[in-house]
Image 1 (cartoon, helix red, strand yellow):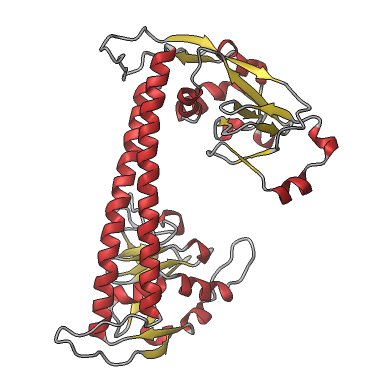
Image 2 (image 1 turned 90 degrees about the horizontal axis):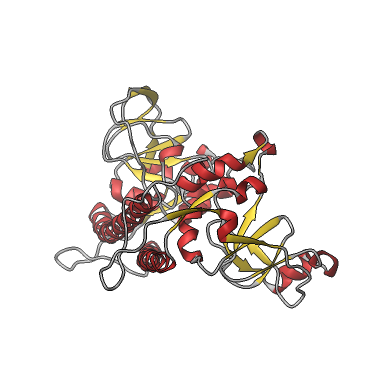
Length: 388
């Protein structure tokens, strides 16, 4: 049996006094398995991984559940824990409201000495999933399940209830900051989309520094503005679809010095994943390197790199790519069709103005992303110190 170690981070009472030392108790001492059924006064709940439970809408409930099926459904109260036999893949879920759940789930309710909001992040942590929960798993491959009797015998950290509540309150404050930052990020991303739409629809036009009008935009095929990078070679800074972020989030290159074979790209090229284009993976290269053959390299021709990136990293462009994509499970863009996509191209000076405008929005967005990442890392570090 895995032993509980003393946490590296402890909290104190409001008067500055020390809380009692943490104990270790069996899960079955802290939580009771609930088997209450036949609650027709409650609504069925569906489980959303990592988000607790949410109620289905009326149409879903009428289709998915009949009276006979409801008889065996288990009653759940807000803050109960919901355990599926395959919970070892992602940890336990917590109910965010009263309801009933499928008989396939086990329901655990905390005792009077348990703060569910303290145990939820613990039950979602790698320390619990890969450490304690792993010893309950039986079977092989697709037949793996949690052995519930062993599950009840797991040793859990057990601070005093006041310290549990203090930790839960502190983590809740951090979660609120993270949620607020995520909302701010989403708002700025929507603003950028709105600005791009107005610019590409020419509802908004820029003017030269002397106040004069720029020439009218030209309508071209993408292939007139850029070409594919096709040259194979060996280089560093490898980019594959797996290290490109969705929603035009750029890339992460962990081993910059490793030599790989692939398609050569240069600084100023635009890389786009051609597998499942709807994931919106694109990057304006700021260095030279090599990439996978599943990544398209667009090389600018008489067009600003930053403006070409704005064209490619847009919902309009991705929609056009997907309109001729081939394959169902792993659709790929049709390379010939992509170069035929119509694009509107302003003069080079106006391209620079547009790129500068959108770049300033990207600066704000990237700063918020960095703040969000820092808060998430801060929370992760706290959890590691508390749940060693």
